[in-house]
Each structure stands twice: as structure tokens, then as C-alpha cells.
Image 1 (cartoon, one colour):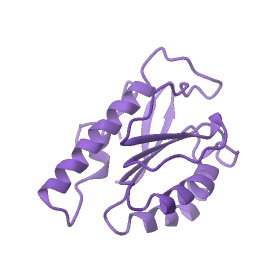
Image 2 (cartoon, helix red, strand yellow; image 1 turned 60 degrees about the vertical axis):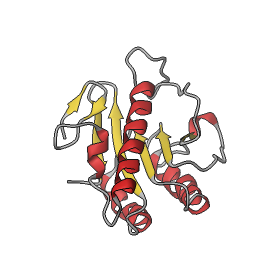
Image 3 (cartoon, one colour; image 1 turned 120 degrees about the vertical axis):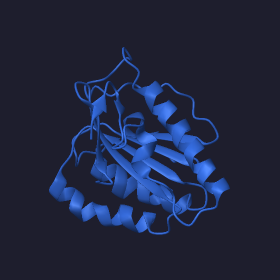
Length: 173
């Protein structure tokens, strides 16, 4: 995957939304709604990672965006949260893989509970992580694949660092 500034570029040269592909078994209206949700999420992620934002030691900017009705941002750095349900969920994973606010804990402790609670509402889930452990991810991947089996739920995992921007980690192409 190519990176451009702070935004991930999909394999077809477009933005983050292209990483999801086209929804299967959907009407044209559902596909249109899905594409609109992707564009909205991409805009919010661009806003979070806009250059010159105030950052902490992980170099992930402090999230200052007010969540709208369609989007919820879950950031364990801000403490234990029970986020409301929304069509788009963005999990910010700031720490090393196994730490309290790292990817593994965000997936196994937060996302799975959130997905079960918000099964009918959530359509897109983004994880933005600062660390990656390929061998550990193999055992966690089954949770994501199970959630996405119905073609209604979509998950994208992006690794981010200040120097290289985003890199798509899941789904792999």
C-alpha cells in the first residue's frame, strides 16, 4: 500500500474507503449509503491526523472532534468508556500491542463488547494502531473475520506512524 502524507491510499489509488471494496449482496441504495459512510469516516480521520495537531508520546493526536450521530471515537487513552452505538466506530490504539490501550486489548476488551451491543447499528469499524505484531494478529484475526462474515459489518486496521502515515494491515490485499 502506498502512503501519501497522513492518509492511506488504497490499492486503486483512491482514499481509505477503497480499502473496504464493494459491499456484496446489497441494493444500489445500500451501496450508496455505504460509500457515503466511508467518505464521512475518511474525513474524520483526516481531521484527527491533520498536520500540526497536538500529540502525546505515541505521536497520535489528541482527539478533539465532537462525535456526530453517525460516528463514535473510542480512545482508551481517555479512560474507560462505554461508547454509544453508531454506524462508524473508530478505535484509537495508542500503546504497545498488549498494553491497556494497545490494539490487542482494544479488540478483545472493547471492540467485541461494542460490536455485540451495537450489532444492528455499526457498519464500519476502523482501528488505528501504533504497533503491530503479525504473529499475535493471526490469533485475533478470527474475531474480526467472524464479525464481518455477514457482509454487513466491515473492519479496517491501519497502522500509523508520524513519519510514514498509514499502512493497511487488515484486510490484506
